Length: 92
Image (tube, rainbow, N blue to C red; front, side, top):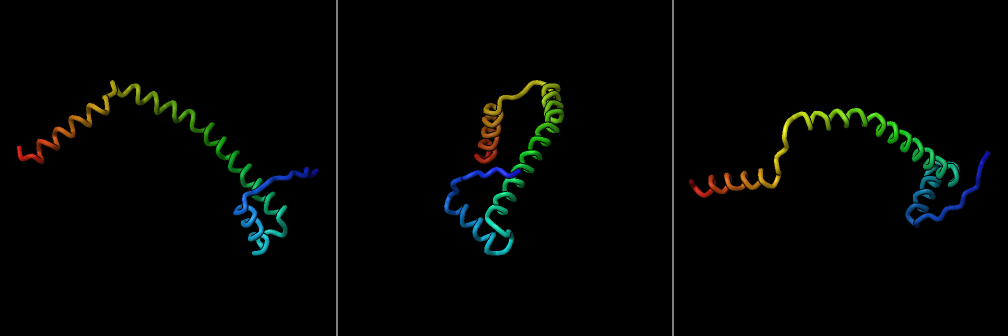
C-alpha cells in the first residue's frame, strides 16, 4: 500500500531530483524520492547497528583508561612542554 506524502524541497534539492530524472537515473521524481528515502532508512539502520556494536568496545576503552592510572592535567603538561621548548630555543 502506498501513502501519498507532500513535502516542500529546497530549490537545489528539487533541481537534483529533476536532474536525476532527466539523466535517466530514475523514471520519475517519485522513484527518485523513494530511492532517497530507502537510502536514508538503510543508513539509519546501519548507524543503529554500529552504535549498538560500539557500546561494548567503548566500555572496554573506558575501563582500560581508568585502569591505566591517574590522569594528568593537560594544561600543566603543555605548560611544562612550553617551558622546555623556551629553554632550548633560548640557548640555555
